[in-house]
Length: 285
Image (tube, rainbow, N blue to C red):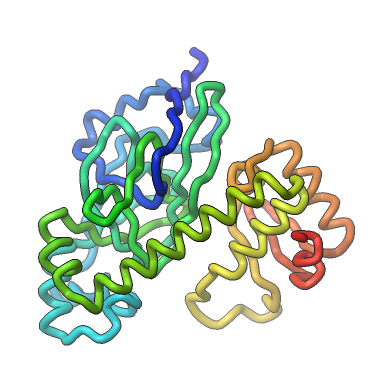
């Protein structure tokens, strides 16, 4: 049976987060049927369960090293950690689908999350790629909405999950944290406005170059680079990059081959190495 992608409605606000799936039973029967949809090649379609992770000894691991919590005392971090248990998702799993709305806030500790929407014709558009150290979620209290967006784990992901009541109690009640949350949401809105401007005023090659530079700048190395790895690498498929740049996979592949032929980047399966960021910046316009 040919998969039928969900209908898309115009976004009315910032697509800055995702929601918590309430049950495995409903997600076990996704709207597109048994076969993976064309906008998500290779997706695993089993029940998308949240797997608790960590133990009591490391209960503050999820919020440690997160910028918005940088000057909290140990007792304050313990209180927040108790209200925000860690959950794990495997690469390719959905953290959120429009059929499963739930108002929660995620704190991303490990991995990347792709927020995207799908048109009635099955074309995907990536709204954001969330990187570690930030917050996202369906939280009207913070001005974040998912609307008809999906959220997918690009890598193996670890998040902490907070309810509306706990967000109000622990985050918004603290002037330090609430100010940093406002700053994060302001940057996200500015990024969205810039992407809208790029879509209108830049051609496809410029948009792809801009996307590569943005992803390179957003990377946070987990440790020292391995020997010989002197250039930043981006772990995205051509399909995912095309969805981020607002074009087709075929067009994205053609542009990437042209960049590679000119020595601007090197391609491997599911990975792009940026070799000449300055020249790529010239291509971005």
